[in-house]
Length: 267
Image 1: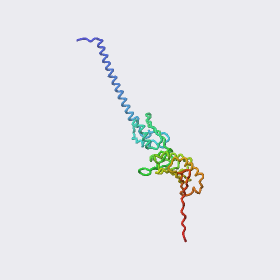
Image 2: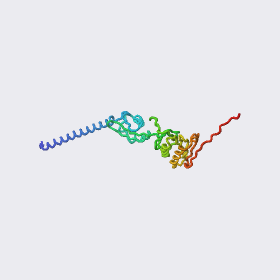
Image 3: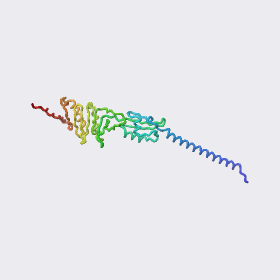
Image 4: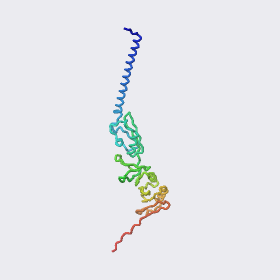
């Protein structure tokens, strides 16, 4: 039998040792990867999970709480945090809540969902015609429609104005009229937008005012209202059913219905 040299035996021993070390290294690597995968999955599944609405933190100038936000978002608790798409949630909240701005962020430690909200401020009560009938709501200072949310606290407009006939096409006109309320000493009560494009107002002291359909004259028409409020005699202001026509602001017309004479009984 042929003998093996000591050098060859050492080389074979080294190769066996390297194979064993390689197998040990591979086993350790696979074990660590498996453990990391299990721990990561467990952390995602059980650690980074919203267990209730108390982990939804609502911040900002808002009347909405975490319960309302969770209901609008349709969270199904326990809710995986990584399944929540902040951009999609922001869009959902914009479409379903009367808010001016929203920002959603996810936080891992501690596990929570932060929602920063700024509410729309209702300036006036409003009504608009919908296919199903007349809908009540509010408008903000820029004339944007604010839908009434039954789940939210009742809103209180900051003025006593009511807008009738709101449409998105005339939003800027509504905003311009609302901005004039200060010049009118908060006397404006109703803004009515008629289907034919005409606009009429209800002034607390002057009564019904027709502005016509030329909205470029709004500034001059408000100047005329301010002047009439200061100069019109009290007995005319008290006339029941009086109408002020400012469609031609240079020549305002005051229409006072003639009351029929009282019937007298013949003896």
